[in-house]
Length: 241
Picture: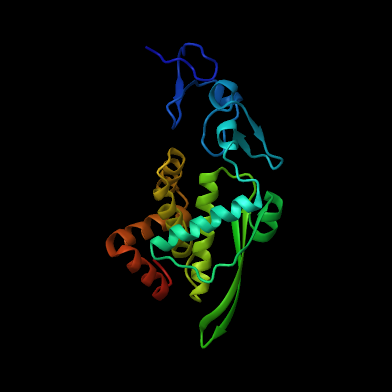
């Protein structure tokens, strides 16, 4: 028996689509109904209690919007929590006195000078003595309006960039650097034990990008083989993975 469509409520007759959350939809809705950029649900009153479009074109459903991070003070608390969680796995960033700001997609694109698809950016200033970082300051910029799980994942990624900079590791290959930063996201997300975190973890393992996805999977296998300390020591002594 065909399931009922979660969007229109009618019995499905013909092709249908199942999302990550167990909702079934008439295939025709996928062409006309917006999907949430973060959870993949079709945005509708019956499924997600509606939703909205951000000014930069991102679409977010009512479920994800309820957990969106839109306040700097809230963001800094979550960022600090991510830093403390990474410390549990031996990834320590000290001193930790970040300048933190939520910013728009357009301002993030200006900072990144890239495609504008990233969700965060880290700025690091350091003082060296005999090739050792003696002091540093950091600025963390995160895209405004991310749901909490995505926000936490992005914070972990950017803080791992800070960890690299704080150890004066600046000439690492993109795959090792970005793969390690996604590994930090994975470590934090797996402690969340929420469906949203599990969906993001699934995305890390399925990411087809050779640098971000491929790099992460190589780092994750390295960590499984040598342990987290072994991975971190590898990152300090190798330029490629």
